[in-house]
Image 1 (cartoon, rainbow, N blue to C red):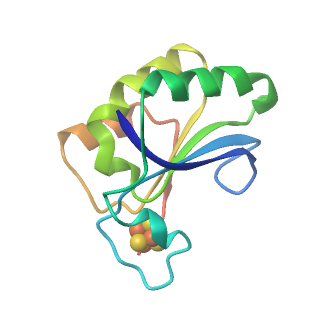
Image 2: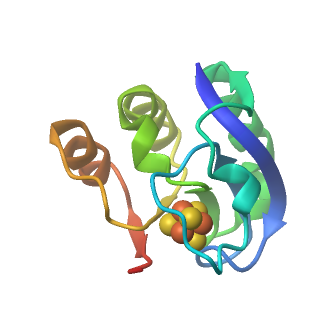
Length: 126
Ligand code: SF4
């Protein structure tokens, strides 16, 4: 299960084109200026089957056009790298462009693999 805070359909601020933005729950940072402070706590959010996110993206693919796709933001998506890896593989297999919005604070083997499956990293240094 992927712990989701919320979604934004047809987002225009989190990567190129029109995008499905998935805000994930949990972040190890505590930035005072955080725009989504209710995503910080690892607890909370909605445990969501990866298949549900995949189907949502496929159903919106026609609106993504040549530039758009799906963006994973938060919170800090790399906290959930292990469960995101198979979803990223399925998204790629369906031709959906993937952006990852990350603070770059977590580096391990799973995060490296997740990054290798990501089309565009939006690195937001804190
Ligand atoms: S890294 Fe991002 S999500 Fe995490 S607390 Fe800072 S601004 Fe908020």
